[in-house]
Length: 184
Image (cartoon, rainbow, N blue to C red):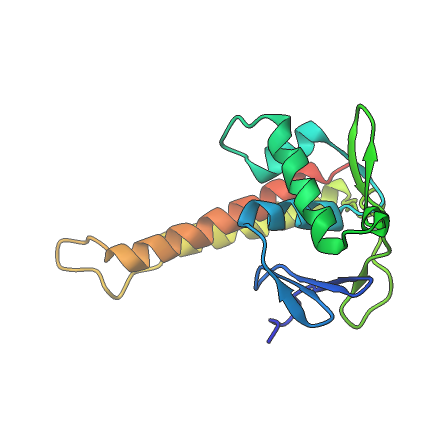
């Protein structure tokens, strides 16, 4: 069952569920590796936009140096999964010398067409950015200074609660970075 606010992507007879890491064809799950799944997810989230090979390599393998052939293999696997006929290419186009573009119409679950990757940007004015950054920083300060009920007499936090607090702070910081980078 999808989570509230979760986006499911539909294109042709396929459904892509990022939370479940599932690709299905007419309700039948397809088996692909995690990196192939991430390749498809990057393309679908940016459909209509050319993603360079470098962009894809950095998104799919952020901490590793990988040859372009690995990306080409992932694209080949996806094309085979979409259909062995030449129609399988109706989903992913190769842009010679540049990269790949997901060309099928993508729809959100129960919604209309999603915007293309080029249109799917956020513009936040400076005052909104400042207000959001202030709220995020206030949240971080409160989380970090909130007394932990698991603290011992020595004042050390239990590892699980400490990790949860740290994760909350990291997520808040990522949100702030995304919003700051959205300013025109």
